[in-house]
Image (cartoon, rainbow, N blue to C red; front, side, top):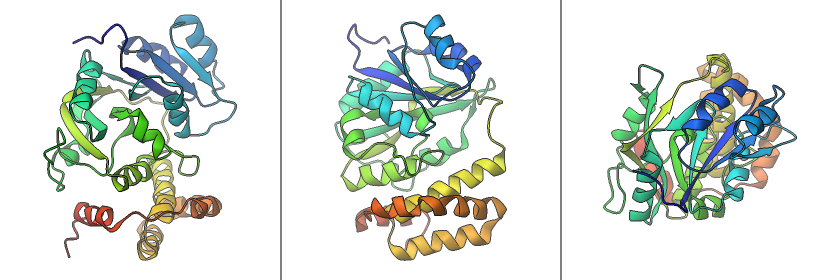
Length: 285
């Protein structure tokens, strides 16, 4: 399956200091690419401009985390935008296939593809959880309903993505998907797992250590709770961070400087979204 002459999907790639990965992955994208570079210092911007002149490169003066993707979506002129990291790409034909699914399901704001990890093409464990989502499959969605997604394996509908603010400057990265998912659900949009389309992810060796990544995820979790959860749940998230482990406590400490900004953006989600969160957490009381 190929995209039409005037494609309705773009690919937004966010990257920082992964020149070699970019040069290997960019040729694999079957749609116009917007690379948003988070202030790389390894020559990524110059290398991509020299090797891939067809790629639109947006170099940023500072690292803004996942907000870089929002900048890319704002720049895109297509109704659908697929995300990829510098170490991931959509399988041949599947950008067009995913766009067709989006067109056929007008309430669908986020499509999460099947993600195959590494040369061995191991199914990402998160995808196994998505396929078994306890939220079921609504009649107007193409797969199990979600209240979260994996950005490097997702296609979004540009208009609602921007209407709810996209990825923000407070949460940044990683764990940036949760706040956006809550806002899309609050606005009545749907998210679904669709395993008929595939994303390949070959994780870069230049990745944070597991403890560092877990701390960063907990930072995002705390800030998202402050922004969108009722006060009792914020307290529970803080207590879990304090009681779980060193990385979680470090994440809580890293969140504290950004709590004032999170409070300025505080808008608790409606009860129907909280009810789905409780179902996902296994709390049916």
